[in-house]
Image 1: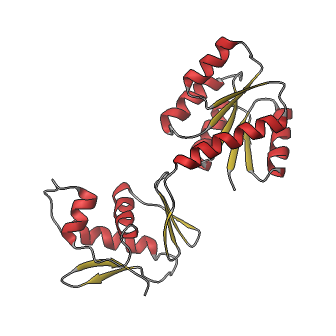
Image 2: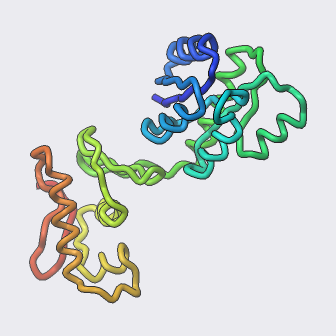
Length: 224
C-alpha cells in the first residue's frame, strides 16, 4: 500500500483527506505545519505528499524546495486556494508534480494522486530479492523477513553486489571492482571486514547465513 503524507494547517482538511484516502486503500499520516511535515517526510518516508501552499511558519513552497533537495523523485501534489495562473506556474516551477485548487472534488484529487504515483512507480527501479532478503534500490534500503537493516553506503553497495549475482562466486578482486572501484589502492582485506560486518547485520535476529565463504575462491550468496 502506498503511504501518503498530508501537510495542511487546517485540521478539517487533514481529517477529511485522512479518512477518505484511508478508505481508498492508502496508508495516511498528517502534519499541521511545514516543520512537522518535513520531519515526517524524513522519518516516515512517504510515497507521495499532498501539500498545502499557505501555511504559517515554513510555507508550502519552501517545504517543497527542501523536499526536492532531499528526494527529486518524491511525488508532491500542491493543494491551495490560490488559483491564479501565476501561482500555479510558481508551484510547478518549484517542483510540484500537480496542482489542485481548493475547494476540490475528492475523486479528482485521488485520480491525480494515482497518476503521480503511477508515474513514479513506472520509473522506479525494481525491488531486488533473494530468499527473505529484499533491497529497494530507489531508497537504498534493505530488509530481511520484514526487519529493516541499517546499512552504511558501502555495506549497501556490497549487499547489492551479492543480490545482483545470487549463487555466483565473487572473488575479492571482483568485489573490489564492483564496490570500491577500479582505482582502489587500499588493503584487499577490507572485503573480509565488510563481509563480516554485513553478516552480523543480516544475522542479528538469528537468521540463517546467506553470505558464505569459499576458501581460495571468494564469497557466494546462497541459502544454507
